[in-house]
Image (cartoon, helix red, strand yellow):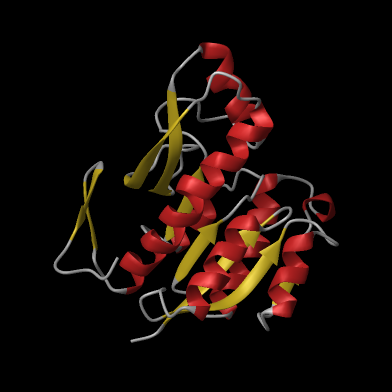
Length: 213
């Protein structure tokens, strides 16, 4: 049975593009990109969605008094569209518990580090890579996890390591993590979800059967 996917974005939409490209290749496990919801107008992710023929919606943070009000508006829109899977792809706002209760174990987030390292409040975008370089780790990567009520705290679905090079800057590291990890892991995790191949067992996520990766 086809699953409807909504992607939440805030900026350029590189991970959204990875999902669009995967859909074009028939690699989303039967899932269909049904909606793109942006937290701001005019971002390039909306252009990517429109070019791909995906309906877009803007639910701007500045139009709401707090995160809870914005979350309620997003949740209502997703429910009206009968969405099965919500994907946070470079979505820069912390959503409150209303959406987690509405979509239990049905929200995926991609984070540009190997959780539990360099995650949580303030760890987003280039900041994550700045933290990794400042700490002196030699390996970083990306994580796709299910979203719960703790920032970056939900059960981990997939992870992939990326080596840090001696001359890396936050910008070069960000790009390599996207190319070598994020753009690979996120479509794969979406495909697994859409094939009903993810089983959540406490903090662990088990991949079932002969999933087509």
